Image (cartoon, rainbow over all chains, first blue to last red; front, side):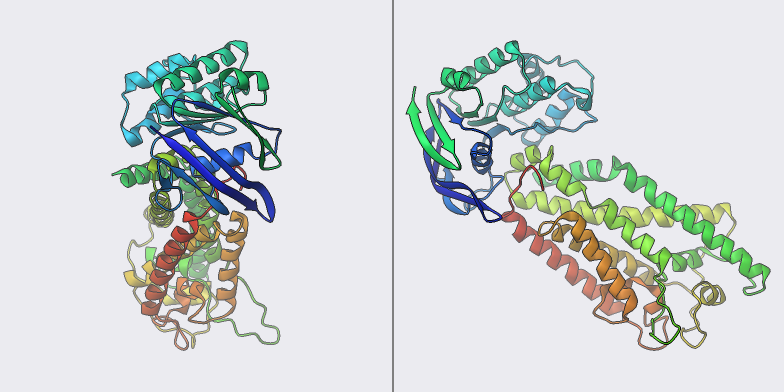
Length: 214
Length: 281
C-alpha cells in the first residue's frame, strides 16, 4: 500500500512563489487529477513528487520516507513530464531497453509488449529523433508504465494524441489503477480528468483552491 | 553496480558518441602541428636551429604557454594562442553534456539511480575521462604526425627551438634537454581540475558563465606569474625546472590540482543534492 503525503509544501524560485502551502494525501489504487491553467503549479508539484525539485518549505514523504532526507527519489516511480526526452539516435525499443537495464526488473519481451500496448511497433527500427510528436508521447507513456511502478506521474499524457490515442491513455490509466498503482495525472481537458480520476485537486496560482471526490 | 552502469552510459554517450570530442582534438593537433613544423623548417633554413625537431618539442609547443609577462613601456601583453586553444577547447566541448543529460533522457536514468550522488560521481568521472581523452587524442595525433613528417619520436627538447618559437630571452630559461613525464602530465592534470571546477560552477551559474570563469582563470594566470594562479602550472615555460627565476613548483602544481579537483567534486556533490532540475536551465 503506497502512500504519498505532501505536507505544507511551498516552493519559491528566484523570489517567485510557485507553490504555496500545498497539503495532500494520496493512496495506491487511486487516480488523482491535477487541474489548473498553465502556470498554476501542476508540473512543479509533479516534479517535486518525482524528486527532481526540492521544496522550499514543507515535506513530501513516500511511505514514510521523506524526499531529500531519507531518499533522493521514490523507489518505484514512473513518470512522463512535459516533453518526453529520449536518445535521438536510438529506436524506441533500444531506448526502453537502456532504461530497463538499470533495474533489470523486466525482460526484453515485456518491453516489446509494452510498446505494442501503447500502439508502437516494437520491431520498428526508426530512430527516436524521427518520431512524430504522438509517437514520442506514446514512448514516454511506455517508459512510465513498463516496470509497473507503485507511483505513476503523467503530466498532460494526452498531448499530441488523436482520439484513439486519448482513449488508449484512459484505458491504460484505469488498468494501472486496477493493478494497484497510485496515479497522478494532470490534464487540460476537464472531461477526461473527471472520467478517470477518483479525486481532483484544482490549483490556482500555486494554491489548492478546490478538492473534490468523484 | 548501478554506478558502474551510469559511468558506462556516460562514457559511451558523452565521449564515444561525442563527435566533437573526437574530431576537435585531431583538428586542433593537426593545425598546431602544421604551424609547429613550418616554424621548425623556417628556423632551420635560417640556421636558428641545427637539428630537426622532436615529439618533445611538439609537446613543449602545445603546453609551453609563455614566460613571465613584465609590464613595461612598449611591452604588449600577448596571450599565448596555442596554449589557450589547447586549454579552452576542452572545457567548451565538455560544457553541455551534463546539463543536456540532466534535462533530457538523463532524468529517467537519474530517477532510476535512486541516488543523486551516483549521477554526480558518474559525471565527475566522465569529465575526467573526457579531458584525459582530449589530451590523449591531441598528443597521439601529434605523435602520428611526427612519424609522418619524420620528426624524432623522442622526449628530447631542442632549447634553441623553444627560445625561438616562444621568443624567450636566453637568460630566462634553463638549458633543459629532456621533457620529463612529470612536467608534461601537470598541464593535463591542471586541465582535469579546471574542467571539474567548470562543471561544478555550472551548478551555481549558467554553463556559459562557468566557461567564462574558466577563461578568466586562464587569462589572469597568463598575465600574472603567481603560485596561486592555477593556469601557471599548465605552462611548461613557467615551471621551476624550466624558468631560471620565479618558476612555479611542479610539486605544488600537482598538490593544488588535486586539492581543486577534490574540492570541486565535493562542492558539486553537496550542491547537486539540493539542486532543482527544471526543464529550462
